[in-house]
Image (tube, rainbow, N blue to C red; front, side, top):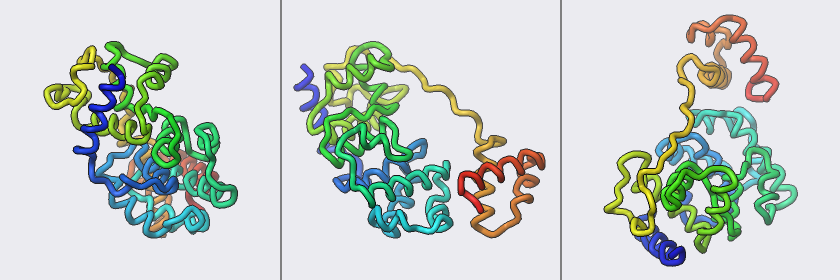
Length: 260
């Protein structure tokens, strides 16, 4: 059953894979940049940023030597600016020592967690690892007929992992985003519907706090103001934040080297 399902999934993927600028690349640097950018950021917002970023710094060595302000300007609009600095730190390590050849080694790079390590490892390095994100968790849970999490999810993903793992991971990502959606899944269009035990299985992820009024909003506005050469103290007032909140955020951003 598993082999038949994976064959159907991969055949569907080859015919329906999304045309994304990082698709088809086996350069671990390009895959890493795309995966870090896609963390908590919509694909539509990433595409143009990815293209500009990788044209500006096409190798790990060039990214490792990029000026911080230039790096943050290129990242602006993606949110979570500290991701850019961690990506640069990872690039510096790889430029000096080469790419790790294992999932655990990839996870030792700054900003690279289990999912990103599995994505880079499977897509670019040919490693057999399921890259379990929200989409994969939902699809695999429906295949299993029950909500999966933790060790049960990992074990199930390993049991049903298809080959090549990089294509299998990307196929499931595309299936989850376009067919096996959170609500109203298009089962009549699904290439593996006959092997799905319960398409109604769905556990909503925790709701993210509102952006307006959040610390994320203040931090992002302060970084943009710094890059534009504006007065940082005015940012807090424009967002109706107290002087203490603004000062605390500025101090934290300076400690993280996001502003000087």
